[in-house]
Image 1: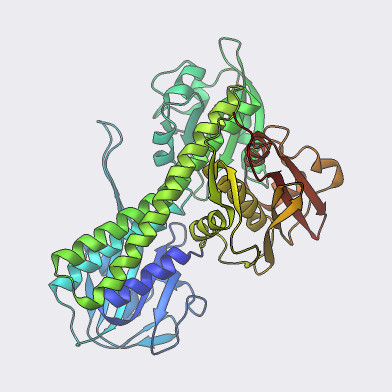
Image 2: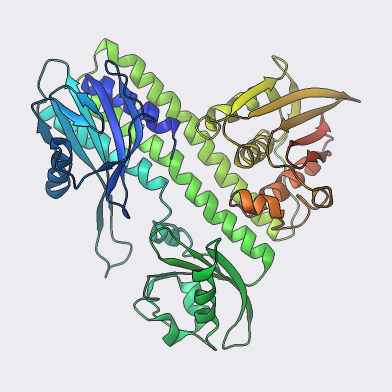
Length: 492
């Protein structure tokens, strides 16, 4: 995981608690080691990339402090300099467990409390940590927990709650093929209620899901799709995917487009957690700082936290709107445009601020005028930028360039163009992108996950504005995606 949000978060932790160094580690469930996610160190040159993975079962004083902090779910302070991996850091050193907590989703379920990482702070200015530092570190570690959990794929039960009202059957199976979680749609498809706690072989109709499980276990890709016929003679598509901790997710749906639409809904629901986490964390920190009395030097921090919250709230609004519009496409309806006059260059600046973390590992180049006034649906056109940029980052290597261009094409038309240096697209596949629901090329499937519906939405938005979508690509060299539409919209 590499997150600009976490990098900035750790910088703020060190600034607020007034330490010379701070580090955020995730705790690996499989290997019981600490994995560095973000580090700031003003004196000793420690960086995230220079730290190795730390075995918390070893005999070092830092490892013992980590174990103690995890056991007691509270802070541990070392009063002497100690080694973190191969670096020695100065005392005092505060080790705070990062604990993820979630209330029970159902009345019969227990609340979840799990250590997902560790926050380490060293060389406190003034020489000692006090109760206020412990309380603040605990609040900040709560924010870190939300950020770390956001990146973990094994939190399927949270995603399942978001799916509870949609007609996609979802089940999470343990390593012994016992159903751990199942939504109402899965129970309807299998005709069994409840499913939780039952072994899949005992509720399987015709051993279809059992065979699916056998196939996914030997699959190199870790995912398999097959047909499934229910007791009511209804046909479904059954998909199985293994998780990092040996569990399996099974999804049952009736049509390819519905599959893609519902997966996109879940994907957007998952993405919504990132801006919501940032907003909640920033507001909690501001509230804590206000309670302690705002100092003049705190004002810049508070302003930055507020600005970030505003950017992420705009991102949430757009993601929700995009999900609703996907539902309209799925229902065969035309997109409705909320036409206004706006600055296309300013819209580009907005999406770049929202995707700063996503584009961190690429060199972003911009070729655009200082101002480009057009008419259109600002939110939907920002979604064009969003899909083009995310695809460019997803399907190109770290360190490569992504070029964004805004320009006039003549005849009062304007173009949005994003060029990458990625895997490229075969000529036979170019014409299918954005036209066939759920279509993805073999090259894109091997490079990254996805459901192929983002480009369908992008093409629909472009055409709804009276424009056209163009793609130029060479396998192994990269792709150029372009949306061309009128500068002014005809009256509806």
